[in-house]
Amino acid sequence: MEQTNPQDMTPEQVEALKEKLKKMSPEELKEFQKKQCIFCQMISGKVQAKKVFEDDKTIAVLDINPANPGHVLLLPKEHYTVMPQLPDDEISHIFMVAKSLSNAILRALEARGTNIIVANGPAAGQRAQHFMVHIIPRKEKDNVEFSLPQKQIPDKELDIIKDKLAAILSKGAKPKPENKGFDISSLDNQKVVEGDFKEIKEEAKPEEKTELPKQEETKKTKKQPGKPKKTPKEAKKSPKKGVDLDDIADLFGEK
Image (cartoon, rainbow, N blue to C red; front, side):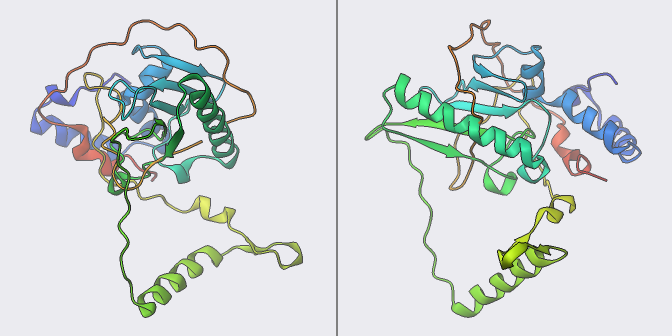
């Protein structure tokens, strides 16, 4: 399947593409997503990036518009849009890698801390359709602000929320031995709502400038990152205007 450039498409062509997407199998849809994903192109080497770590499942690159110098984007090599789509072993691995990257940042950059953040879904500030973890070096008075509002919610509303969550988490879940809670892995097979993403295209700067909203991203493996690998110069990018695949992002989810 050839790569589609939505900026060069007429409204009629976009409508035709929508119809074509509706007829695609889940496998074809995933392949289509990968061809449009700037981060998949980085992983394949088609787009240059400042790579600091790589193993068989993940790659970590420097954000070219960092919240702080040394801001790292940790990506699974396989294309996933949001966290619930990742298999358990990959989630475990990527957060273990994030742990080691955080330690490396603390040592190499003399940071006083790190923010490890996941923007999971567009309402949470996720702009690209590739799941990632942000590892952001922090120092005193660095003027990077992360603040969560503290709202007052009546007990009755809290009880309603608690009951809704309990109903979903316990649905189809099997009791664990010795009454130690429930196995909720069956929830992984439920449909994931992806929403409308503001995907950063090949011409755009790789990953959000991290106007990280009030909530966001994190993760890693037992292998400690070695010496940073030398990589080619980063490609310069500038956003285009026009028709965008965001208009059909709702068709990218699982069928």
